[in-house]
Image 1 (cartoon, rainbow, N blue to C red):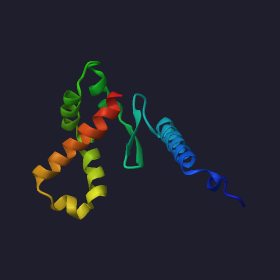
Image 2 (cartoon, one colour):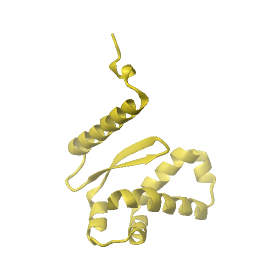
Image 3 (cartoon, helix red, strand yellow):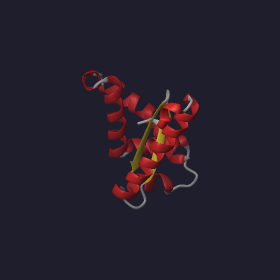
Image 4 (cartoon, helix red, strand yellow):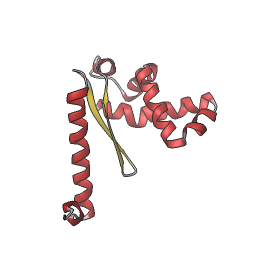
Length: 125
């Protein structure tokens, strides 16, 4: 049986994969998510991660329509969900062992940077 995706050039394949991941994330959010959550996609170095942000987190960001990136970063860092999200991403990047062995201050800096550079801009978009 022919695999139709093998006939795509690299750019077309990338676009098809992006569309498929976005559609899958939206379906997962629709079926498994709760009202008020938001599907967010973050792309970094060719990798794309899609996930649903819970409504209580979105409420904190949406409460102030003029919220700045700095304010959003601080607000998000205070929320347990955002800290766990950034810690989970960091465990995948650094390995659980390396992550746990890092000094707390270094882990905090990495988490704040992830929230500021990836999560907050995606939620403000």
